[in-house]
Length: 368
Image 1 (tube, one colour):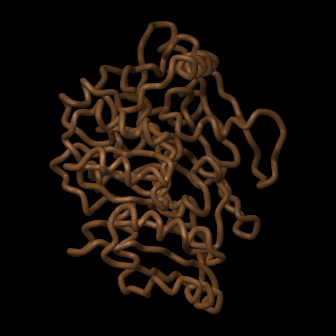
Image 2: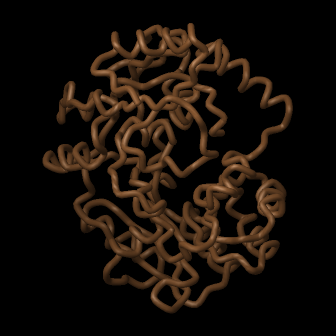
Image 3: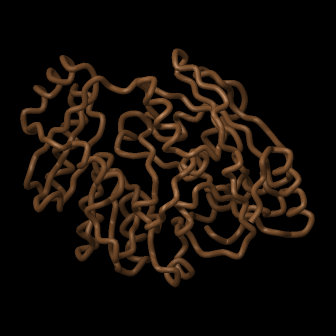
């Protein structure tokens, strides 16, 4: 393992790896080590890039080192009454790891929680970054302003790249004020199709729903939940637009369970399916023995199942989406790719993009 302390050291390490044919695996807090195939590559510990570079609360802009712990950043912005609006979370509880996620790992994995439904994902809040490419060269993209349309939008490309393009060293993020009031509403007893229909009606209303999820097994019953955020008077008025739903207590615990897929059994492989929301009930019908929950009004299906991986991916593809293997045994991770196989044309485009950033495959470890 190597742990660079600055970008110059990282450039040297990457250039040396390129010259010697060494593969490098980028690692932050290690909370996602069990995603993807085990691989034999030299680990680059990115936690040396852990600092608060600049924080301007009035401008809603934060610049941090990529190795800064997510928990530290959330505490910092909370102290100013602000938040990371894409609702990031730590995979530690989900994957059985004790270390804490770093902000670089969160962005590289494109992680977003229930509020992504209304506020967008990690890619929508990444304004700019500094990174080191597989060529061993430092480069900068984006800017430290919210409105920036100059050049290629590389921040959107980097979010969700899983460390296969470049090593992020510094990130500039947009933050937002924390809502004054949060209210969770619920309807009980719906099946998958009824839940998706109810969530669709709510999303199509003027109630400005922040998050929408369905948990078939929340404390012994099926619960379809909505969250409203804002000023108290506004939240109350918008709740009145949703007479089918009733306020519930302990909404924070419910949304935490949604983020971490906590109602699903740890003993089964865990899949993350992105599908057209209206198709989610069909996915469940095609996999009758699976345990599941819906987030993003049905657009995200967390699925715990030991069904044939090909059947799971076929169900996701039929629904216009894709399936990622998030948690599985080491043997299964060796045999089943973590990411959904792509059509040949799209795979060719992706390969060309990777080669542009990493021509010799320094970051191509075989993990994905």
